[in-house]
Image (cartoon, rainbow, N blue to C red; front, side, top):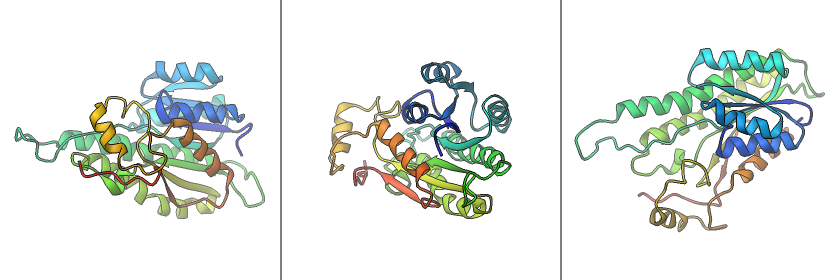
Length: 253
């Protein structure tokens, strides 16, 4: 279900998304790379012979235009992987007495609404396509959560809430879309080598890695991409969330 089929990857300009786009392309997929930065999307798409599209996933108009272009230029997507997201660190009550309602709203719009919007357009396109096999499969949607949905640290209320929302909609979405032969899964990565983590001070990184039993290191984006492949290729994976975290449980601080 990968070779020769169309895959859409958001957040494809860097990190988990870029690794996923490259991996799916290497397996023979025609990949549409969506990123807020069109130049970043173009850099990855240029490597893999894919289609680059600049779009804000929290914008219904921009995502709709992106999918219209994908269907027109590549064909109906059968795989959609949402990796676009932002990491927000903001306390509910900062020491200066200010509030963090604005960052909370922005985080949910990108991470949760953005994921829902991409899933909606992907599902509509897939549902209109012909089945691919005797089971009636038409496609698979993979959303990115985070271990923070269970192990949120201080200052991660917004981020944890957004990723918890992604987790919570996985099963109902899978049940609803099952009549169209569309599977929905979520991956909850632990600490990975991405743009979100590269700015961590060495002492913070070392402290966090103490809670990662084995392998006691940062995850590599290609390991996320390999899990995407496994989900796409295994039709019995549906409606679940997989923690990809080396059995880590994040500390409080």
